[in-house]
Amino acid sequence: MNIGVVVFPGSNCDHDCVHVLSDVLGQKAIEVWHKETSLSGLDAVILPGGFSYGDYLRTGAIARFSPVMAAIKQFVAEGGMVLGICNGFQILLEAGLLPGAMLRNTSLHFICKDVYLRVENAATPFTGRCEPWQVLKFPIAHADGNYYTDEVTLSQMKANAQIVFRYCTPEGKIIPEANPNGSLDNIAGIRNAAGNVLGMMPHPERCAEDVLGNDDGRLIFLSMLDALKKAVLQPKTVGV
Amino acid sequence: MKAKIHVTLKPGILDPQGKAIEQALATLGYTSASNVRMGKYLELDLNETAKEKAEAQVKAMCEKLLANTIIEEYRYELV
Image 1 (tube, rainbow over the protein chains, first blue to last red):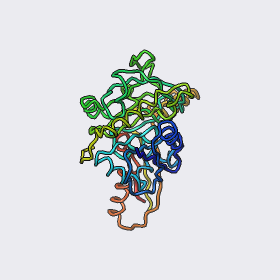
Image 2 (tube, helix red, strand yellow):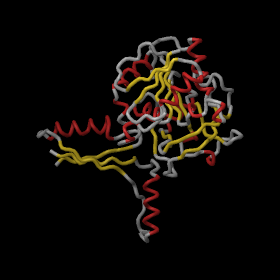
Image 3 (cartoon, rainbow over the protein chains, first blue to last red):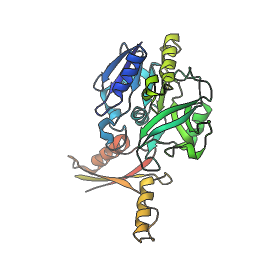
Image 4 (cartoon, each protein chain N blue to C red):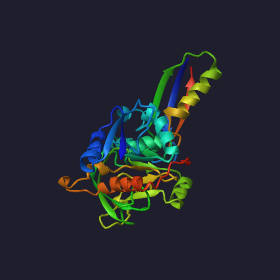
């Protein structure tokens, strides 16, 4: 599969994504500079973590106007799979490709540590390899991961099973103490209504091989590859 | 023409920075201060003399880029 990894000025997890896709999973990973206006030939696109445009103004606020974002909107409208990790998630929110916004962590700290996530929806193209309610251990590294949306949007998201990951205890309990950043409803990752866009704050690319002591992150990439192979997402025009 | 723009979190949206500042003020003895809200201030020159046009431009800038209206509100003055 040909997977594009978008590189914005200030992206810093792009190489990790490329490494996992190519060296660990044997796929063709293609770096896509943010000035690119076409995504032709790509089967899926990843927006990696980092500090695009130095997080100036708001995280992701300036990156969303990069030329590549128009191509990504088109790609999404045609049913293409897009995964946004950390800053990539923030960019997808600012671009309106996912609902909601990010606030500063309630602790005001940049938090870099392993957390536990519960898979709330295992029937997405990004979580097909997971069991329902499976608990995963992923690292987070962010200062603005405090997800917020209004009550109406939240209830719509719940009704559409758009909440994909929530912060939990190692036993899978969703309690405030397991919430590292104050995120609404312990939300760690969400998908769009059409199901072809996922945003998540935790970093699957940082825990995708045995040598690192944790390969839970592989599940996300393997799920995506399964979905692409099965052509679950037929090219079509879908709403966001 | 100059635009002076304030962007602040909407009422009801948790403002951890404002809270931290409020605690710091209390530590300094300013216990009468409450509801501290932290925001951004932007200033820009506009090459525009018609106030109506300038206002439309500033409003569009705020809606598109300067504020995220899911969590923030904005106000501006033109001088």
